[in-house]
Amino acid sequence: MRVVVINSGSSSIKYESFNLNGLSSAAKGLLECIGAAKSRLKHRWLTPAGAWEEIAETRPVADHREGFSFILEVSGRARADSAETEVFAVGHRVVHGGEKFREPAIIDDATLREIEALIPLAPLHNPANVRGINVMRELLPRVPQVAVFDTAFHQTMPPRAFHYALPYDLYQSAGVRRYGFHGSSHYYVAKEASRYLGIPSDKLNLITLHLGNGASATAIERGKSIDTSMGLTPLEGLIMGTRCGDLDPAVHFYLARKTGRSFEEIEGILNRESGLTGICGTNDMREIQSRVSGGDVRASLALEMFCYRIKKYIGAYYAALGSVDAIVFTGGIGENSAVVRGKSCEGLAGIGISLDGRRNIASGSGIREIQAEDDRVKILVIPTDEEREIAQQTVEVVGRAKDHGR
Ligand code: ADP
Image (cartoon, rainbow, N blue to C red):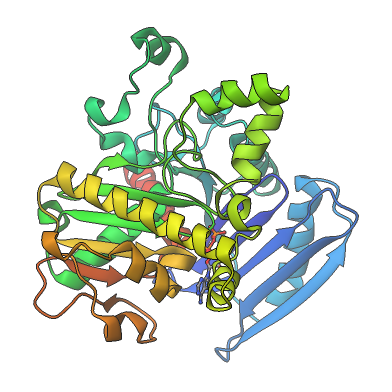
């Protein structure tokens, strides 16, 4: 049997199918450009002989419903040579779970209404997640569906960390507070760190740095998130591919008055035209690094700013935690960019954080230790796997519900 994980975005659907037994990956794919004249689907699957094969197809896909049908059709064709395909459960990534969801939830009509009620908090993300859920419930009505929330892992933050210093009423009436995101990734790498170091999670203090196109830092005290850099929305905190991260809130009013731009336009600038892209024109860290080598001043500035912001968060979370067992780098940049890891940890030897230059640049897959030999704080590179974490949580929740029903 299979566990299918769906990450439904505004114009894309990412999915992965796992064997229930052992949660090994069986197939995965990405449909992009939904709503455009040509939507691209790339589907990969593992053949019984143990080799990955790939189909790429392009066709017009008007909406998510057509998108899912397209995926089912293509994956059905690919499945002709692999026997067991019955779906045990579907896990949906849902970006915002508000304060309501501290844990993953089986999706029924009531859960769906609650997720819809959270749309005002995440207008750029939750509507597409809901669309994915609706279509999958229709297509597989008898299969349990589970929502796994990006925010849930951070619901352990204490009030002093999650409140903004705004009129308290805005928290009570409008839910304005820090929620944090990338929860499945921070949780997954924290568990991996615990396993790797042989230290139980409830005895482990970590700073986890998820550095991909979106980026966030989390302070984890004895296995629980006590602070994180993303806030009410994923816009706050670290500098990202196209998002600005921390910013004086007065910039919004100043821009509105000075340039006459609407709130929607400013929201677009801060979310899609800022961050690394805003400074040097690209969000691709590989390109930035190669431009830096060629002497490109803007690319150097973007890289310096990106790493300096990370370093500030390491310092802040070190202070919040009091003692740190390990710093974890993950995400496309965290896992692959020795330059970013090196610069982000520069000058921190005084607080027991220093990288070993050779270990940092050594290539390798899996978990790696890159701190200097006798350093107090371990520095780990841990590949993240959010889909697998969602699959794991989906299986656990469905298993518990079934036990309960017995
Ligand atoms: P997403 O948040 O979209 O899942 P990823 O986690 O895949 O993003 O990270 C994408 C980022 O990782 C891009 O900036 C990309 O340039 C960067 N990246 C991927 N491989 C490397 C590499 N070998 N060196 C430096 N950066 C890399």
